[in-house]
Amino acid sequence: GPSAAGLTLNVPASATRMWTPEDPHLYGIRYRLCCKGEVLDEALSYVGLRTVTCEQDQVFLNGQPIYLRMVLDQGYYPDGLWTAPRKESLWRDIDLAMRLGFNGARLHQKVFEPWYFHYADLMGFLVVAEYPDWPGDKTRRWKLPEGYVRLVQEEWPRVVEALHNHPSLIMWTLLNEMGPSGGWEHNCGMGGGFRNYADAATRRRCIQEHQDFVKALCGAVRKADLQRRLVHDVSGWIHVPSARPDVWSFHDYTQDAGRFEKVLADLPARHVEGRKGQPLLVTEYGGVGMEDGGPCGRNPKSFLAGYRGGFTASQGAEVLNKVAALTSAIYRTGEVAGFCYTQLYDIEWEKNGLLRYDRRPKRGLSLAALRRTFGGELQAGRWAGVSAAGRWAAQ
Image (tube, rainbow, N blue to C red; front, top):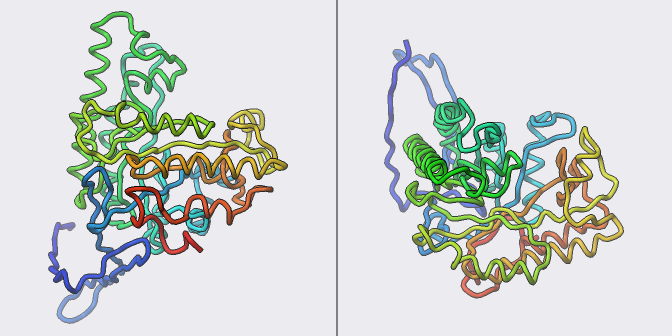
């Protein structure tokens, strides 16, 4: 019958070759089941050695600070919808992101296929994994949907167990834009935050429920994750200090670069309560929309409505300038330790990708210009000389 067994292998530090985006070294492993000298079964695997920590409001990879330049990837495909039609499609998405200058991706609102993480390991691409959100209960807006807490608490540890051996995976994002002042009721179209609740007791109950849920979930993920990756409680909205999130994050889709820079300058002051030196990340920004006649999703009306800016193929230079200006504003903000641009390609209802839904370049958007924006050398203030990208970013 099945049995549990473990093997500890001690490797001298002087003999190790660490996994990095620039040098994604993997150690091959061969497992053999033998009986009296005869090989009964054999399996091949690999392992990558790396550490990821947070210190002095920065992210460190193998003890060295690294600036996260990530892109949002929602895992949609015209010929597979929410499942890659073939494993090569996953490799292609990573390759395209790297060629655009990004050193990683935030995998948004789904648990991606295992082949994605395998290719990320091989290619030196950093990954943030995320669990799907769930809309709030419209009839009981103070309460999470029935069964949601149990489902998430059961599934998250299984996700962690399945993916924990991938060196490319550096962070877990547990929830997206979810909290008592924006998340559940925001997802239901309620809006308004605390003032939606009928009385103070209901408000307190909602806040406490949210905090208890997030704290328990963070604890469960940390316990399941043997490699102790970074744990991000809620991307972009209400953080729970008692959950001890490793990073603090922020979403903003301001389209004017000057106004955006002012918003960024105010971030440290706005994120004082509960923050204790965690790196500050802009995990969603940009979202600059462009319609160039590329393929639409299954509902064209929804597809065409879901983008900001309203630029057309004849305005490619304007799109490039806006994307560059917004990104430069982040670079100039010394307190921000990394970003995630929205998004890599158009999806079913959003037309704000850097690429078409079929992954072809958009007319008027120079891939070389985008690569200079996202993969250029960091020269601003405290980030000068900090590792920022993988092997292909500056090419």
